[in-house]
Image 1 (cartoon, one colour):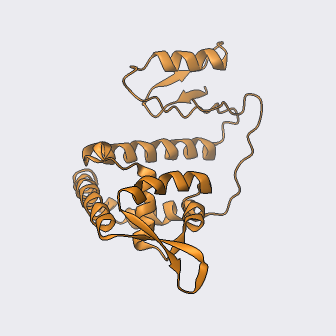
Image 2 (cartoon, rainbow, N blue to C red; image 1 turned 90 degrees about the vertical axis):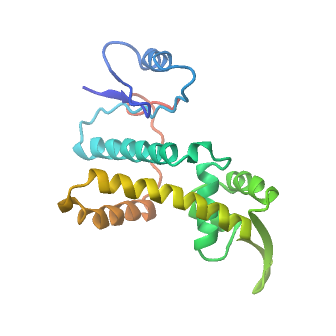
Image 3 (cartoon, rainbow, N blue to C red; image 1 turned 60 degrees about the vertical axis):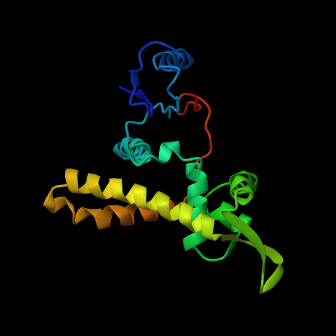
Length: 205
């Protein structure tokens, strides 16, 4: 039977009710103090690959949220998008705002909103490309590098402890394979799936 799946680990079996009614039930079932970020999918094909893809998405989101919570990053003034962009600025090649937007799969306007607060707080600065004066490159300041380093240390400390606690010795060899798969998925050139009408997909809450 198809299900609505939510990042709050709440799921609702689909019966005879209409999708909008089910969305309303999902919304009311969670405390208003909890941010509801439901990924609502109506699986009709029964494809094993589709089901595995949905489970992978949910697992990644759960782990991401757990890392932020346990390492204290949920209390950070910087969003996940800002920290991801800052990490790319520090460790990636010299980039313009447009380069960063493309690398992070964001619209240029969205990247501008990400970079704005970091520029105001002195985490990043802009300077002209010495090889092409028309291009403005984004660079991290000393403060920005220190902020990123502190975040990475907290995140890595919790994740390392979790890996040591959960994984069996024979499972450690699977980690490099998993990392490779996730990186290949992140870098793949599969075009976006067009939004289809009908019961195959329900809009996100």
